[in-house]
Length: 389
Picture 1 (cartoon, helix red, strand yellow):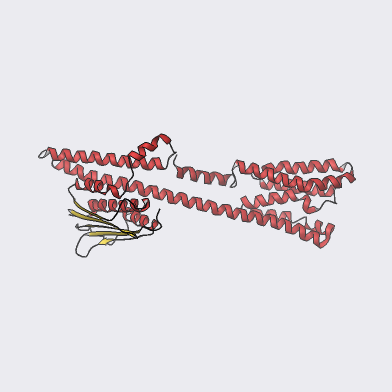
Picture 2 (cartoon, one colour; picture 1 turned 120 degrees about the vertical axis):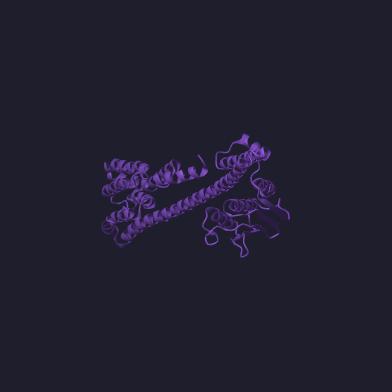
């Protein structure tokens, strides 16, 4: 399973558990149980001593509240109901214990419910837990009423804040998954589309000269084999990059480096084998560029050459110029073909050109692609070096 699939699966699994892992749910239980015992235990014991037989019943009710907190993530509404009833029973048995303290476990559960359930559900729970407020007013006056309502509202608000925070994290994770899938799709498109386009042209050339010039046909077949092996190597690197890390494969990765501007000669050679004349001109230091810029520049050249093979009618020459400066890398690819009807109008409609624009955008650069007034098609990109990874 690739990392993006595992990541998206973790997102949905987390939502199914209310956004908490099993370990986090256990930690929440222990923390909330400890809080209830520390806050409610001493007052119940101190006040219960004066009420004789009521003390054991009150202690059991407190322990019941602590125990059912274990399921507050799975069934917060049910746990809230149990804790509210048990808390009111403790307060009825021991009126000297404050109502707010007796309902502490219910307030903790309200906080959890507010965080992991829809707002309309949590609002009903909030309203339900405010119902004992008149009893608090009768027991403690205005101060008792304010404390009771304030504690309930604060518990609900804390849950809302936590829920919003978790929603933001899930949204960021989903966005990262979508972006990663789009990047993988661009990589696969660049590798497969270019290689297949070159192989189709080479296969057609081999078929044309198979009888008259068998040696030239053999060269075309060998070029097809070389291109296929190169594409398979890139696909293996791509799949390995999104698969589990395996230590013994590191050597293989080092022996088979990924695409970069250092491999432009190899790329141009594979296109020349189809009969298209490729003029390659490079200026500046290409080996010291950030990896993202080097890969983007390589993919732009690759996609532009592929488009020339597939779409430029009558093209027999293409010029590739890569200039690496201190601030930016400029890439220009110009062919002399005639654009098929609608090519200039739909310059940005194909997936290849859309992919190029997206790659350039990700590194903060700019791209221009379109038909030239005197004939031919030009792809020009400017990729900033500063700030790129």
